[in-house]
View: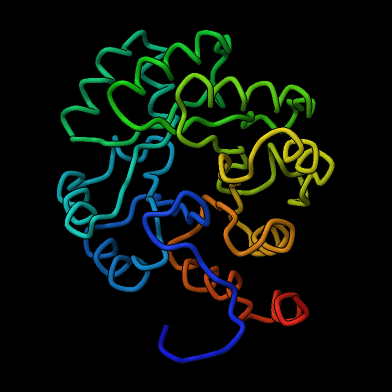
Length: 253
């Protein structure tokens, strides 16, 4: 930090197991990726190339090399996995991971119907090749999953080999753990946290009010995902009580 200030919340240090900021790259150019790294790298833990944008992003290898040079972990969005799987091309997907020297992969079923036991088998298989991040929750706002089922799914995926489990919200922040208004499903979150360690979950929180809510509930070192590149610095100030939304919260603590 550029200044000395007393009583700032203590942030975990990179590489972190909790306090993670996962950033959503929805198709940044190589120049934008360079600018992003210059500004946000100290506060970003991993970059997700959203859904299947990696398939149509120009100069993909050059952009991935920018992230490698900056020692910034990255991975392809889970929708790409689903797109290969539904076409019976799982082995081809694994070859794509090898071709691009991927160290992480996301396994999700937000857009397809996939029996959960089968999903866990894919997690187990890929966890021997890469670090797996799996995702629970549907992209369909009409599909509501009961809290007990969220807990069962998360626990099973962690047991199958997931490093972290993402709680679905989409980049819009109005499905999964949120109502269609963007409001947090508080009862759901409370129940999940009675059964699952908070450091095992990355909560997708693309909207500032959602980020504030989780930071006030869990603390500065909550794992948050689907953060827009231009929102990384603002998020870090919220984590540290240096923005009005959490200023009084941390002073009172």
